[in-house]
Image 1 (spheres, rainbow, N blue to C red):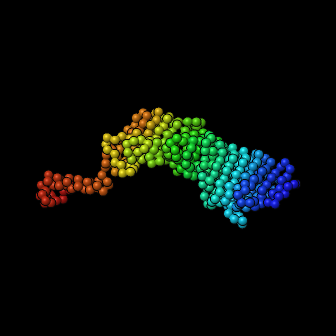
Image 2 (cartoon, helix red, strand yellow):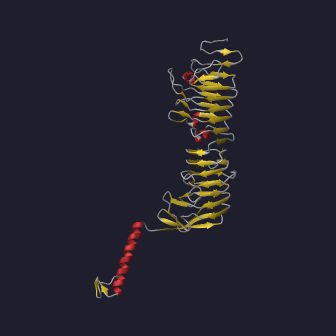
Image 3 (cartoon, rainbow, N blue to C red):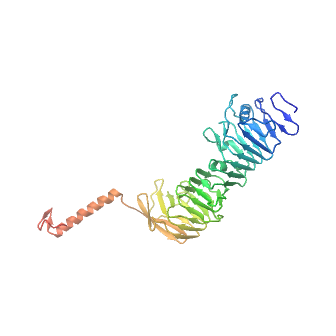
Length: 400
């Protein structure tokens, strides 16, 4: 070994250069590894650079930025904490440069400093956190185009957030289970090799009208507890099995808006389509589900009035479009309630339209109207039978 320096780093000829002790503030500290693989954990650091101790990295992050490189993969092999150090607060930047980064366990960082992931593929079993929450995606810059979510201990949302903002991205959800709230703000592919396909038990929303989430695999099931919404496009045309099935809630828009489906839409008997209406313009004032393929309808339709809007009988709202339509909503074969009134529901071969809104009395008003009607009917019967002002001239045992 040669070239041992005052900062405690050593260079082995042709192999490794490490900067593992405290460096001067503001100087970029690099950890180079000629090894194909580098593991980061809580064990004993290895001189050849194949294993780096997380606490040493945290200690150096108190005074300088650090870059860790490997020619093949970097693995997080323990739950590691890069947020604390006896030498101060680890607040400088950490950069990982490697073809494949495997987040096999959780990695916690301080509230300061940024993370740069120069990688093609990121395998996720754990999470990257700051404190008790997922790290703010604004603090992470990533080039990864293949994100593999390998277990429910990882986060699909974080996989989306930590992927490349500019290149085409595939998020492979190995278990096929969505159990969190996921917002998609860029076009990407959600893939699953699970024979059961994708199953959404959380909330999945598309946040931009220009964003398309392309779903590949056997099927996509929105489970009973699942919610799908947003204003972009869900492309389910490439599913190879049973396609898209809604057993939960589909709510187009971000109050309100148009949610588009490329492919076929099928709503089961326990599914629900929720529509908000706050004006007469589709997209900006009321919701619409726009299906490029066929729409098979069952289950429920819920319509609600928002922003104080009260439709006139002449207003009409095309809440669903499709290349073909079959079936009807079980609770709305001809009418559906909204606010203090009812819409007539019209089913065409390619759409569902709400119109002829007419108010209905509140339950208390109905009871009062019923009571008044009964009183008038009783009075009329008394008059017909010789009763006047409550005095009956015929057999009082007769019931009217």
